[in-house]
Length: 200
View 1 (cartoon, rainbow, N blue to C red):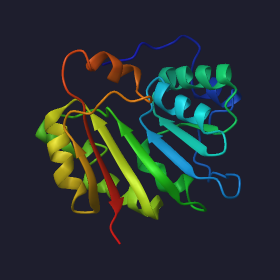
View 2: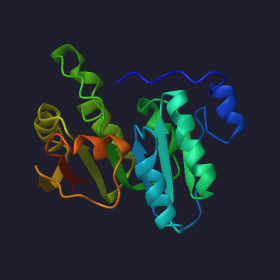
View 3: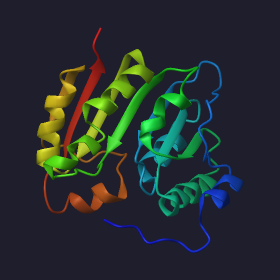
């Protein structure tokens, strides 16, 4: 779904608000666990997690400036010092985590790119999975949540080549942490989730 452009909101404005808009290796407090959501949308999921786990570090990556602004608004309102917001594409993921390894990566309701010629753009495609594997810890976890069955089935095939599948749920129960999109989609059909760990 196309997001409306918000007048006056661009990368320069967001940078002044503390959003990272250029590739910069991140720095985290020593000993903190690190959790990353790629394609954070309006930020309901990641801000709720950050609020409930103040001693962990969270990163929201979103490439649309007007959507990124919504995440910043929630961060500011909740005073979340443990949430870093990045305005960028996931293809640069490794550049941000040169000095740290990530505990978990979340992919929530990513664009399914249903046409075959666009499958390489999927965030679960092999090129992205290699990036995730490179930034995750040895026992790090990847979590996918979607309402799109074809994407789920295809992603299962992609992911099991690189990761060990630890959970496959085709009718996910309501959880405390959900995106705004998930709340809406639960009224029309099942939610699918899979979890996978880096192969040892």
